[in-house]
Length: 455
Image (cartoon, rainbow, N blue to C red; front, top):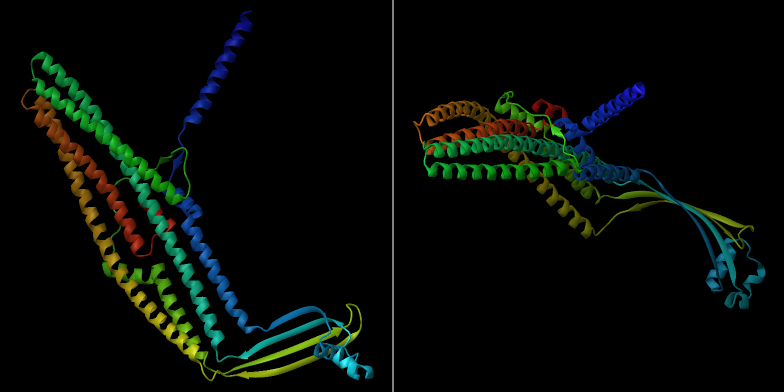
């Protein structure tokens, strides 16, 4: 009996430990690094999917333009029946079944209905079109390259949105931590104020001030939690999927990022920015379209051929014939072509202006991002020093208040200064990281690999 009871106890202990291990494993919060968030976004974001579809469409357009170099062949199977005199006469002649009796006036005027089963094969080939097709092919290739560059730009913009949302969540978490700590401090301060009033060491106004301070800290905590929800919504939108369970994010600590030379950053951006590359290729494609419209004025030489077999029944015998030739075409009144050329020239001028505007905007974006990056690093150092000073000032003020050498108002002011300095510091830390990410984006260097350097 003792052995059986001991065995039951060991079994209960075993299953209890096993259940506890499963519960601990289930309670473990999943994690999400910045790179993992970026990879999810690049695989699920609908804007990237749409951009890739545009690339496929542009590639199909380039393939379609190449088909102008190849001949066109058509196969036709035609079945007809009628008693139209001209139709009957021609059909019997093509079927090679024309007889002497078919010349009778009655047969010519009122022929007997005949059927015709026609198998026809024809083709044509544009031999020379004054290089219009070549220019169309060139424009289509450039358009496909432009679509690829636009897709790259969309990916970089998506990476930037993920970094921004990720940073917003981390900053919101820091604000929540600060708010929770300040709320706990406010609760302790309120308890001390009540105790001092009860002991006759403070007045009732100190208790009221401590209560107001606690209420303000609770409001700040609620606001920080709301900002957290908004930041998570932005991250989920950027990644293209919702997360039922919010994972733990890898924190980003304060660090110094490399400083480059502004002129080098601008030169690199003009070479690397995918959106500028798209504008350049669009301008070149527009120039090719203008050249194609001008070449359309030239003569065109085409070859054509036709083979046909006519039968009185589907499996019967009949006659066959063929025709082949070469054709020269010249538009002697090209009013429509002139309008097309004017339209293409206007489009080329617009594309050139857009390219110049894009270069100017990129220069401005790099200058602005570079300035924010340099400024953000200086702000971090200043904010850290201010936070340390505010913390020390609060410690001194707390000691003075306990010793009755300062008022509740002085203590609350020190509390506010310390809280604001902490928030300002973490805002500066994440602002510094975000400023460097924006500089990478402005120079066209923000990729999933380079984004890993932010963490």
